[in-house]
Amino acid sequence: YNVYSELLYEELMKQIGIKNVSFDLGQYDGCRATLSENMLNDYSNNQFIINASELLISRKNSYNGEESIEDLFDSIHKYCRAEYLDEEIEERCISDIQKVCIADIFLLSTDRDVKDFDFIAGIDSNNEDNLELAPLCHNTYALGSNFSKDEIIEMLDDYDMMIERLNLCYFDAGIPEYKRDYDYPYWEDSLYYFVDEDESNLEFAEECAEKLNIDDAIKKVEMRISTKLPDEYKEFIRTAFDTRLRCICQALNLDYYKIMDNKYYEYEMEEI
Image (cartoon, rainbow, N blue to C red; front, side, top):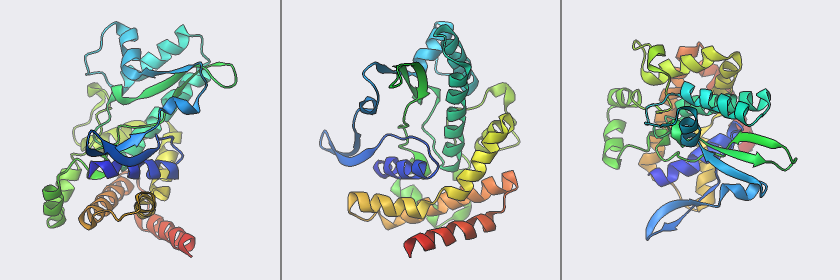
């Protein structure tokens, strides 16, 4: 099912204003796959991609795969200083990464770590030096799509098992070990870390709770690929998404039922 998760994640990111690579369903080496154009097609000829691992290496001359999100923020700071980029550019990059991490928590994304962030650098269309977060990819295991078909069917028959396994769904772009609170599941601990860092992150988390609509995303993906997604997969991702949303609302003291009433009222009005 993970070929569908890239398409679903793209549609969900549109709902909250985060840039994502645009994917199509196709064939690659004889296998069904999601395909995209070069993300640089939308940028100037003087811009290029820098992967987060390159920034981490430039910061300390090595990269061992164990760096935390704070290591990446520090690397961005040092890159911006070295390239004489405005502080506003640095702050925007870090803010955009934090928002992606919050969205990943909502969408149970498990395959993004610090090296999976890309950046667009160089002279932009305004003829100015710039650095910005590149459109997202690496969303293959969002929405519980890391589970096999048999595991999904098993969890649909056992909701307690589903909750237990979904609590283990967290992204690897994690918080530093010294800031961990092991009284919470990893995803919840990470959520507290980001919303405590900046009040705007709490506002963004509330926006995610209000705007992310899994039914609308499913509908648009089915229209794009001109076929229905498997019934058991749709049932699972709806249940998984709703379960995580309930937990987040509880963690952040948000009114889940009010959010759902508003969300589906708006969705029904759009249908009309």
